Image (cartoon, rainbow over all chains, first blue to last red):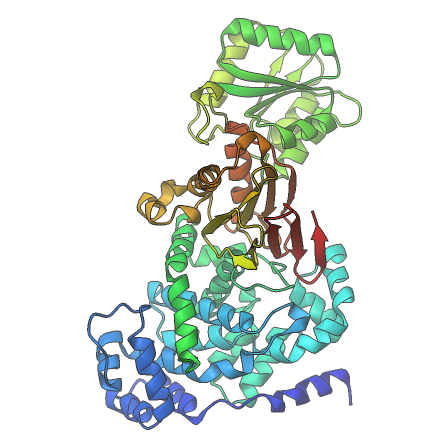
Length: 286
Length: 141
Length: 159
């Protein structure tokens, strides 16, 4: 069995995605689905409902009225946001441990993932993406590959850093060169294993390679942008740091300006405390 | 608005002449900085706040062209305007330095009015954000 | 006891049992100052250089921006006994994504700002570790004034 086979086998050891997440993803990608279907599916899962309502009532959303039902949540926050929150509530467990290879402590990777997903969500709204919940979910889960790859990165860390520092490779390219696979490709394999829709798999695979996106696809560039902003903003980054490429054409295609960047960072900063609370509540911690 | 000017030339007497000419011209200089070649100039640039560089072309260790190239490759220095101070017969090298990104050139010996006009033109353009603050404005903290 | 300085945050302390620490600087800049005579230390973690872009936000949280955060850091330190001429100053951070030719050059801009503001205010930097593409963590012990810099994945060094 090759090293890569061994790595891929570890996918099975991840906690599987919950049924409710699948159902919600299915509903969100079907334009004929109704609000009631979504509400019905969520209501059925008590734990998710409880966490969802706690989050809706948190200071992050600053809603004046207390949300007491899923239906109300959808009415006040909208279908897209609720779908995103469901994804958040049900996906954190795999990310929770420390990933020593990336020098990430417990909670760091999840905090980073949630932050980048929230930024991606804002950008998806700004660019009027058809399925913002899909962009959110992809951004949320894009680094799942790091969870598995961490031990391998740790073992080969010196070799990887040499490639980065001396050969000028990105961390991703160095992972691939030294280990045989990078965390984005691995993440895509996980998404495939979990039977995610192809667009979601693609976003995860190419979140560091937006140059590979189709010219009229904005989802991948958006997740790339959100990820870049997170890296720069000092949110639980790891040993891979900012060793990733800048794709000018992609950013130009989005017509994302210097002002846009700074305003996004400022808006993100305002949400930071709220994000901590969001994460705690999503975990079901009291 | 006063500007910090860095004069780069391997001859100290030439640097003195340039400094005097600028002073006489009345162009508003905050601080005069000096270097005897391109490499030294880069050291000064990383230590001090420089708004404008006036450089000779032929110098040992690192010449004027190389200095322009290095500055344009540096995020921090690339927006600092560079003026080449040229001599008779260095036309090709001047052309090359302009292609590399130098903002202008002036042939020596030059008169005070000439240098004032040139520097005034360059520094007067809105796109360059001067980093120099009047020291006697006092500290904020 | 570690006192965490978050993103767009600033803390000063004269508690000898305390250490100020800020994680994962990325493109942000961390400024640490220390007065060994008064045993006062301060640490700022700012995200963007110039508050001109959003004055209102700067008023609500001056630590987002270097031009409002840095003066605040020093002034708060003076309030608990620090004196400017005794201060040791450390700057870290300002990392950038690779191939930086434009938009994502926040790291360099943040660094330019701190140099500019220190130059104007006659502040000398005693130690700096900026640039590259690495994540840095900066820690300052109040009792001793010892500072530690961790470069993620590479290691810890005493400054």
